[in-house]
Image (cartoon, rainbow, N blue to C red; front, side):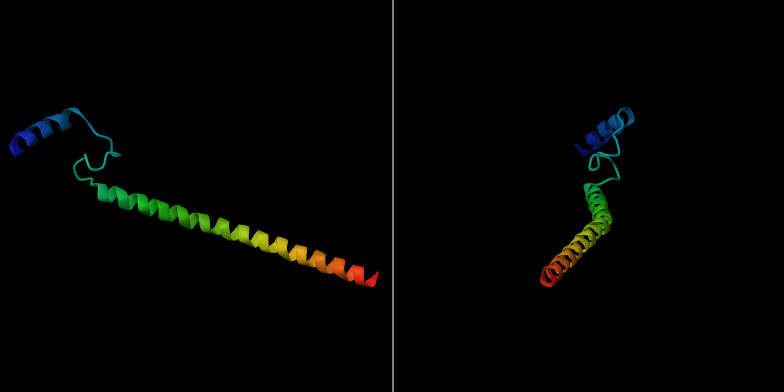
Length: 81
């Protein structure tokens, strides 16, 4: 049966070409390779998003400092009036 499968598989591969996206069905391209590639891409995306997240925190801290200054200013103005 294996010999027959190889003959049919060889003839089909000559006629039909699978895309590179079909890992697991193409020779020399396993699903594990695709999983590792996807994980790598997700990690890179996560790393790229961190600086933006840090920038958002910096902006929030600036807003908090401004609020504190305003509040302090209002309190001092209230005390001296």
